[in-house]
Image 1 (cartoon, one colour):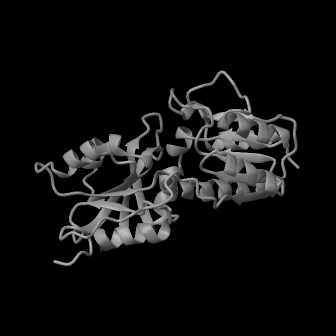
Image 2 (cartoon, helix red, strand yellow):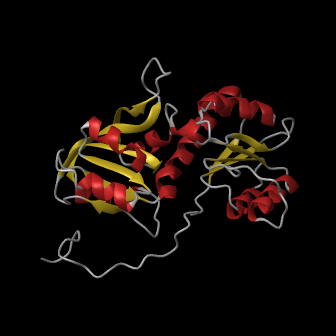
Image 3 (cartoon, helix red, strand yellow):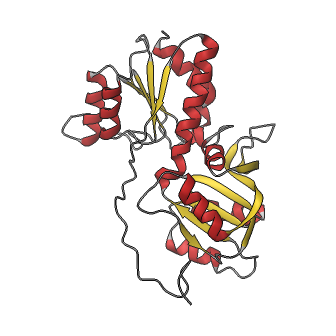
Length: 288
């Protein structure tokens, strides 16, 4: 069995820490570099439910997309919910490693996994990484559909292919507009509106779209109409767990490690229920 330090070195090759944003907190949070690793669990969020799942699974390493301590801390006391996570992991000899914005911009990365889940063909990064001479790394992806879909059909595909959440898929724009090209970005994406406009796509699928930026974006009559599809943050990033697990599986086979790599299917999206409003004439699928 490989040591934790060997597995972390492999993960760092996939998602180098130096490519994370300066404000981010990536890398190994807890874990003894010398401990042996035989079972790995991938998840989006390092919350208590996932820590408990790692314990039940008998995992030696938990790899998450979101950091545990993004803004720093002065305590890991078990009286705090993050402290309980730390105590649970250490008590059961489970290491925690985080790949966040360094996984967002990787090739392949979070948005490649999102595009793959929707059967979209990636053309290029939405916001290229200037340090990448090949122009393949960067934030978000510009994609093509193999066959044109309406906005309504693309939203239905996203609702079917992405993990189910209370939110589902929200849409802004003409539901019958034809989509041939689409930009995608896993996680919060309304800071990318200028790049989306510049890309000349027909639709943008992301998460966490706020009222004012979205309203201003769709009301901009100086540009061609462009639909917005807003999914749950967790749902847009979960496909990366499957991608990361597959990459680590390949490394394990190549190195003869025989790691058992798992992906958590526990839904850690914070929203747990949705009450639909009464239909209106402007709603998708509503009667005229």
